[in-house]
Image (cartoon, rainbow, N blue to C red):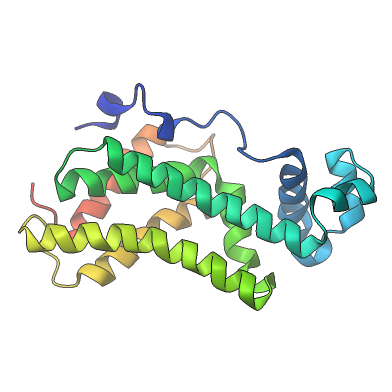
Length: 206
């Protein structure tokens, strides 16, 4: 089934705003521009139209802002992926396509959020990093389960299902580092092309 044929009425495909509160949107802009270490609480408060005490009312530290932002990013991605699977057909191939399309669209339309979440994992305190990685692993395991099921059903021919699944997710995540709205491929064209690559990677039957 083509992307165009499935697009209408699918809320997980729709990206109408940043999906962030005013404070987290201000933190995102500052972290994108200056990095976590270079951004100051005063600057983030100014971007959000708040005083520093007003910002602290919402988030008690810069670390809390980073954790709030990265958790929001991962939970939105997981929510969209679960919604995509719920709308997909029953076969592993249909659910695989749905998760891959969700990952690709997210990393196109939320590329700044995804980039900051990936880059600034190193800036998280240990417990926060552990919690973030658990959410990231949950997304990976969603696709791992589908690929293993596809292999067991004879629909995917890869002899290395976990490796193939990780390779496909890595490919989708990397879109956030280079995709631009004024680039040569429209979102639908990119999804079609990368779905073909992803299917090939897991050895999907034609």
